[in-house]
Image 1 (spheres, rainbow, N blue to C red):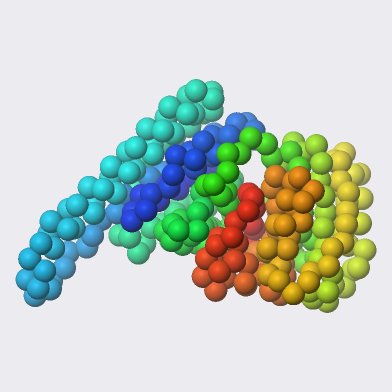
Image 2: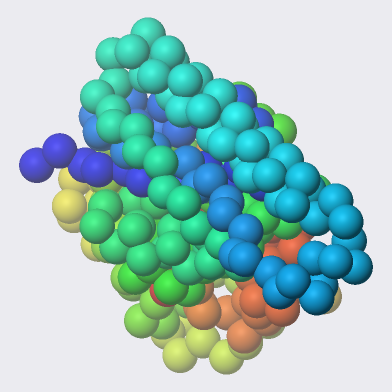
Length: 278
C-alpha cells in the first residue's frame, strides 16, 4: 500500500515558506509516499452595510486579502508541482476555499483521509500554528510538525518518547513507516516528571522493537524543571536524531508542549521534526 501524505498550505495572513514544500517533498520521497498538497484560499464572509459604511474602503480591503491569499496559494502549489516532479514524487494539488477562522478545522477534517499530515511551522506564523494544533487534536491521524528553518534530508534516527501510556503506544504504531526505515531508534523515558508504573518500560519497548527486526536502544533522562517538550527535543538533538515521536498526552506537562496555545511549547520552539499522535 502506498502511503498518502497530506500537506495543508497556509496562505494568509502569512503564507508557508517554500522550505515547507521542499521538506514535504523530501519526507514523501523518503517514505515512498504520494504527496497530496492543498492550498487554503481564504474567503471573507459578507459584512453588514452599517459596518461597511464605517470603513469606506472595506470592499477593497476584502478583495486585496482574498487576492493575496490566492496568489500565495498558487505560488506554493506551483512549487509543489516543480519540486515533486524533480524528485519523482507522485503528487496531487487542490485548492480549498474557507473563511480564515475555519481553515484549521477544515485542514484537520481533510487530514482524516490520509496516512500522515505534514505541516511547516515557524514561531511567527500563527496560522500554521493553529493548523498544526488542529491536526494533532482533531484529525485522528499522526501529524509531523517540521520547522521551516531547517532543510530536511534524512529521517533515519528516530527518538521515541516513552512513558508506557496508551497515547505513547499509539504514537509508536503510527510511526511504523518511519521506524521501518530507521537505522537507529532511541527509546527515551524522562524520569522525575510523573509517576511511571513500568520503570523498565523503555527497555522493554526497545527489546520489543529489536524482536521485530529494528535497531533500537533505550535510555532514561532526568526531566528537570523545564518544559518536557524542550527537554526531549534537546536530548534528541544532542544524540543526532532527526525526528522525535511522541503521544499527544503522554506527559503531565505536555500541555505546555502543545496545548495552551501551541505557540507556548513545541510550536513556539520547534527544534526538529516532531511526530505527534493523539
